[in-house]
Amino acid sequence: MVPAKLIDGWVVYVWDMKKKLIHVMDPSRLASITDARRSLHEDISSVLHASLARCLVTYFEDWVISETPWTRFFPFLGSKSFTEQESGVVAAYLARNYDGRRVEIALNEEFLYEVKKGSCLMYSRWKVTWQVFQAASQMQ
Image (cartoon, rainbow, N blue to C red):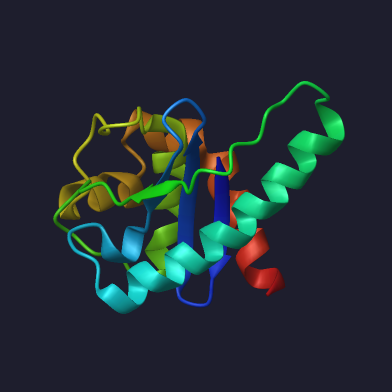
């Protein structure tokens, strides 16, 4: 799992090693994704994938790297597209709660409202993670 800060917000890439599948979760495009955005994610995930493969070969002698192309999967996870400022907390939630198919809490206006007002239990669990995402955002 790799959270990545793009120019317009946070994204989470998740590798399913058994299925040779890369899940792409983009909080700014949860409901639908354009061909241009899909192409961008394919390029970024290809670079990350090549780096992951180099690490696996370096640190795990017996790891077999398949030459088969990996499929990108863009799951439908909500009806709202989040802003750049909101994408960090959404990415943190996705990184923690995505099970390969779905998340427990719908990613919509109500989700964001609960996070902002601080009454959501998930918010308290992710307060530290959110601070890390904010700090990383400010460094760029």
